[in-house]
Length: 372
Image (cartoon, rainbow, N blue to C red; front, side, top):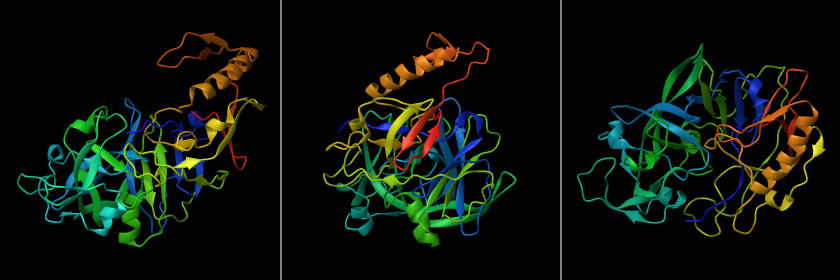
């Protein structure tokens, strides 16, 4: 298992502290918005934020008869998984195991085949494509069989109500026990991956419902009274005309970043090209090589829904702090003791002091102000 290092931008938002939600269309655009309008041909699921764990999770129905499950959203997991037995998903007339020689098995990146000696059920199948259940907090990888079953998404959202339940057949995922649930929010029983893979939910929705292969995240804040949403299918999201749209392209890390990967396969996570950081218009002098991928896939700038705050390489962090502290003191802010895991904290004197503006500069000069 390789330890990978990358600069991580969890929500990738502009002026996050003043906006209700952040909105991200993978491979298309990135903005802040409070709208939840749904275009024709778009399907969606709700997103709720756990304020204690700072994790985003969704809820849907799986199987026949349907079982209600909550799963944490992850842009970088190899497979979707949940604790099937714990969740009551022990029998379904629509589930099927994915055989070792199936095309989906090879497309999933599976490394082998797995069998189970117990009674046949979703969490126990013979001669089944091997999948792994894990999260970034797992102390190990949990091997299990890949299966398929129907899940329910929605085709409308009106006045905080998700409407028009729509069945999506053959969604691939794996069952797990309690082991990989370590440090997940108590409200969820697994992970729903939105990674760049053939077994991610956006891939299944696009294929089954014949909509464009795009998805978007509208993430709620900790204090949002209404849920956010993950949209599948692209289209016009009916954004307010007052919102200025800015874009930056996704880039591919040519080297794998998963705990287990095949040498030569690119990463299935999402990256953008960060080229610099500015504080009040002053460029922060940093080791620019850390912003690019090395031959092992380390480095670069990753978008994450799992990291609760922006995570920087220690050298980049030190350079940024050095410039920020000087500008903050010059503006009249008073430095105080660190708290809550943050090492550099300030208190406004209330005499016109202003927080220095931090700009993240990307390859096409897009700037995200005060990204958290």
